[in-house]
Every structure is written in structure tokens, then in C-alpha cells.
Image (cartoon, rainbow, N blue to C red; front, top):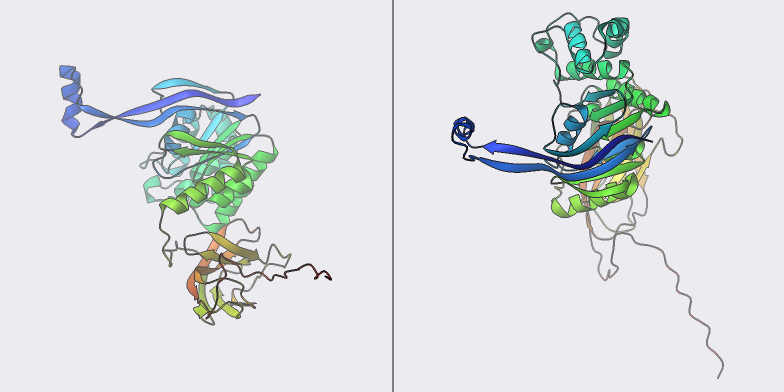
Length: 383
């Protein structure tokens, strides 16, 4: 049984260079627009109770697809069948009015979802509590921060208990604690057999939540299949198309980390020491060390959560680790220290530094890693 069936879905936008061109086209019946194909004959199915990932670069058609499935946009052609009540978390502000209060926007958003007012009235207190907006709920929405708005939108969508939940980057906005609570609620939806369409640029969340995924590329399906295979193919293609800089720009995180390396130039089999000073709010933290090649290829990752170590609860402190006899072959790499929440699901702090593994005299090995080898020759036969 399928919750979502899409067959040959196409969406074409008309792009006008000037607003007056639209009126001229109507009056003269002569085209003054340039067609832009956002979706081109998309076909796929989502089973009832499945969490289905949708990935792709900006402009690939992901948001257009989700808006059509949510009923916000109409397709140019093709067939869509959606079974059950749908709640959608699209881009920030969809279904909200900035002049209305948060409480009034609860009812406005719910009405757009087709929910009766008496049901929303029963859920109102829980919606406000989950969004953590008790003190602000009667203030105009235009006074809310972006994080407060997405908390309210998410709370309305999940409290009405839809059959199908459409999520478009909702976990990328808000503070770390609310991201964790939102992720837990989505996991609860999945455990209860709800259908989820999950669109994100965070490949960890896609792999964590989804069994299957679809990669959209310029309005077409580039790949559809097991999430692990689709994500790997997408990341491989992204590395080929994008030059990775040695010092990535980091977003603002609640945990501040300052990392120091014993050396930024090192020879194979030498020891690399890493120290990181951190400041947090006292929430449980796990830490991970990650080594990447400078083109983004993951070389190594290990975390305290993977090792079964307890989370760190100190508000301020340091972590130190050693990478003895570093077995990287010559090349440019990035070393990172990552702080996550206690479930190791959400990044709440990170720091990166480049290192250069130098080529010793006479070094002729190729590849990434220096492996120990033992060649076994057959014994000489007596002549």
C-alpha cells in the first residue's frame, strides 16, 4: 500500500524579465516569457509508513516537489495521489501572517492543513508548550526570531498527528535542544508507522532516518534506491563538482571549541596530538575526531559515543587525544573536533585545522594510508 504515488510530474514556471511583460502577453497573446522546467517527468512511490529521503543541490527542484505534494502549488502536468492527512514543514513563514499573534497563527496554519477548529482548540496548550513559547504566544509573529517561528510551525504540524509529514530542512533551524526534540518527535512518528518525506542537506540525518532516498538533479531523478547508495553517489558527485577549501566557514554553534595541534606539518608514522578547549551550557556532550582529505573525502572518524564512553557534562573544560604513528600518506588533510548532543545526532560545535603530511625521502607508496605488509615468498627448491 502506497501513501504517495507520483507519475510523470512536471512543473514549468514562466519567467518574465519585466512585470509589464506578463500583461503584454495576456493582451497580445504573444509569448514574452522564458519557460523554466523545475520538475521534468518525475515518477516515484512512497510506501505507507516509510521515511523517504529527498536530496539534491540548491535549485534541483526539491522544494517545488514538496510544495506540490503539500497542495501549495499545482503541477503543470502529471498525476499525484496522496492518501491521508498531510502536514508540511516547508520554508520558514509558509502559512503564517506576520501581523497576527502566535496564537492566531496556530489556528491559521491549522486551517490551511484542513483541521477543524475544535480539534485545534483541544491541542492548543500542547502546541504552545512543545514550541516553548508560553511567554510570547500572544505577541505578533513579526516580533519572533526565525527560530521561534520554526518552533511554532513544527509544533503545529506534529501535534495535529498527520498521516503524512513533509519536512523541508526543519531540523536546520532553532537551537540545539529544540533540534533534538524535533528529531525525537520525527523518530516517534516513524515508530508509529507514519509516512515521512524528509528533505535535507544534512546527509547524516538522511542516513539516520531514511531507508530509501531520491536524488534530484536539475528537475530530474538522478538516482533512487537505498539511502546509503544514493547518499554516497551524491557526495561523490558533489566532491567532483566542488572545490573544498582547507578552512571551511563554520556556522554559529552554542558550544565554542578552540583546537590546537602539536604540528600542522607531519611525516608518516609520527604522533599527532590534538587538544580542544570548549565552553558549553552543561548539557551532556559527546566528542568526535574526524580526518578528511582536503577534497572532502572522509578518511577516519571516531567518537566517544561510538566507543561507549559516557557523555561529558562539564560546562567548561578540555579534551585531548593522540593519534600515534599516524598512518596517512603524503597529502593535505583536515582534522576536526566535533561536539554533539548526548545522542550523537546533532552537531553543536566544531573546529577544524588543516595539516600537511610531508613526503619523507625515498617514500614511494601511493594512496591514503600506510599499511603494514609482509611479503611471503616460496622457499627455494633444492636443485
